[in-house]
Image (cartoon, each protein chain N blue to C red):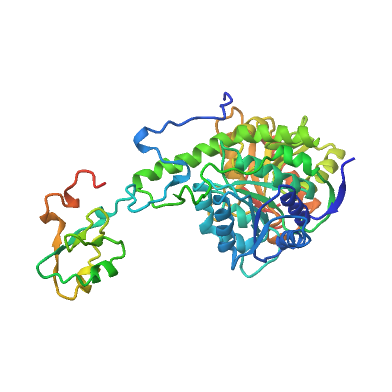
Length: 397
Length: 116
């Protein structure tokens, strides 16, 4: 029988990285992700993990170390939270443009001002267009599995892209849950050693990240865009493999919860999906046909799957945990993607969004019930009155 | 709407193709894939009669675009990589370097159809 442990998200991510046999780890402290590095430093110090543990002088250096290590042919791991994620912003595009598949663990934290330790997706959602694979975990189990899965996806020769493996700060990173530990031999079977086609080699000198001419700019960007077009098929293949080897039941892009005959669904990513499940259960007990669709990858965004799945419902409420100030839908980010994906669909559902849990506030069951009222009305009329509702505020719900 | 296939392939014409991640062979001496001489609008021109081979131009050139031909005993300028910063002109001890506009040369970079 597989070994089970009681782990918080941070520890689970660290064990995931250790099972993936990471070779270079670069750290810098910022809560809440620090727990990952604390756990990994222990594993390295105890001799349980053979890896170079390097302290960066900041997050910018951390990511530079990670993609430098990936260029040298090592499986590299780093991570951060909140303002640390945005401080390293410059390094994201060189890593993805250089096609260096390092991994960065994110435990979300709100951005300043004036300093808030709570969880909010805005930190890394601000980096979603930097060419990194990106997705959220809902439980410690999922973050452990994602850590291993993302390496396999990112290192696939058809992909070669770095990855953000994200979990909500505190709600996932600091609340323990049961984690079924994969066997090391199984992980080794699933995840072969990392090989980069252009790893640095003193006997065959090459330059990574050289200056290019403007006329090479479109071609190098298309190369990265093409990798993202090729990624969804790889994700499906890899998730199938993972489910088979480890006996899990992940869907590649969207997990549907009680969506049979649902009139409306919450569209959500990350840790708040746990509360949403209970809200759906309670609403169903009262005869309300509610459901939930959980997004597992926001980059690449599963356009086809979203169009196919969400077009089954009458109304969709995007539960937004990140901000897009002045954006087309005047609130969050997910609704932009969802509405775009549904544009070509016949009879699309009514789509609105709810700003919830910003700054690390809990999204309570009551708040989900309030959202449900708006969505039930939208399902009935086929229309939404507002693009965005700020829960608990005037003109909100 | 019909379900689209995942893998759309864009084709890139051969002359626009770039290596994966823009990785290129490391230069041994000169990186021919990155000519910078075309950034220049003015160039240093040497008067070999005045030059005393002090090597100041060689020392100060940020792009190693001056070197000493020991057999001929004269300084040689590299037109492909000199960006025209003219530091060498400022640093020359014997004023043997003068500044000339690229338009004055038949092969001056501003006259090329395709500058690289």
